[in-house]
Length: 474
Image (cartoon, rainbow, N blue to C red; front, side, top):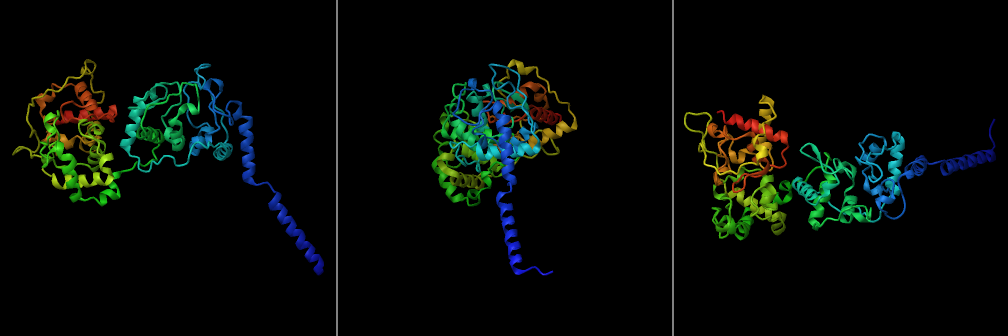
């Protein structure tokens, strides 16, 4: 039966009205999730946490405030925490004056945690925290180590724990920073660090006396700690180095470096006479063989930054990135005088340095003298020590000074006074205890070119010592 045109029009109108009402008045799935998240927060979270209001003392709260949580926490960590897959941030109770046992947090389902995290991200936002207030795109690994040291120097570890040599270090009174880079947003960290009492007044929060640069370093350290996905900037791979000019660098060397290192790099500049240890003799070094990261760090951040003499200034702020790149280009092109001395005729290996060496190395404190290497002399430990010695030790591989054969004849070694230790000298090495070697590697040796390798873990130091012992058997 054919439907009259008038009825066709009516059916069409009815269909269009129904279609319009379906998409106008049907619940939006996202809105439903948001409503469910809001219900969870109001019924469960606010039993302990506040989500509105002004900052109050910790001693007036039951748990940390969440009114700024949307700009504080990284979403992946927050979802993981809400589903019960993260360790408690407070190893003691947040209100440590009431209890010293950590409170057990409620766990949500994955779907609930996702919805709550999205709600928090959208609605619990603190306008004081400015987006991209800190730029970490040029943040380097060495800068993170500066921030870490400032964190320690300014007593932050009195309350917060960080990892040190594979073990927790610091007080248990407040939040841990083991994985702070996974947990906290960089912009919130910066704003909090700028004045912690703004967020928890009269609660023991500490205002540190640091410069703007120091604040940048500490914030960057916290924002990257434990975050393996963060890629540190490597300035020696930047456009500045691609466009480096040895000609410009020669002028910079004359204007700045020659006052200590001398016009020809002989270490005889006008300032050298009053310095001990003496400036490096660049003319006797194979600077073209040194790693770029080491050269950049020692020029830009100064000798102290890499465990060398504090007499070497940090030139980065003076010369800028391009100036540093230019002067390094000049140094690498000009100073190539340190090829390693060959072994004695007729010997494939063996000492080519002085043996025994006259030394005045300071003795380690008594508590180190009786230390014994806890690692066995197996091939795995020796190979690991060899890799550190040849390439991986930071700030500089041991072979650069001590030589590939361990005889003290490395690219840098020939310019150092006293000369680097000749590890192939068996009669001398047998009288040096494991503890003495450990202490020197960790702390350096004042008055010599031996830098401190504080970043090496204990296991790595003992592996190095295992390898060094093998050199003395040649």
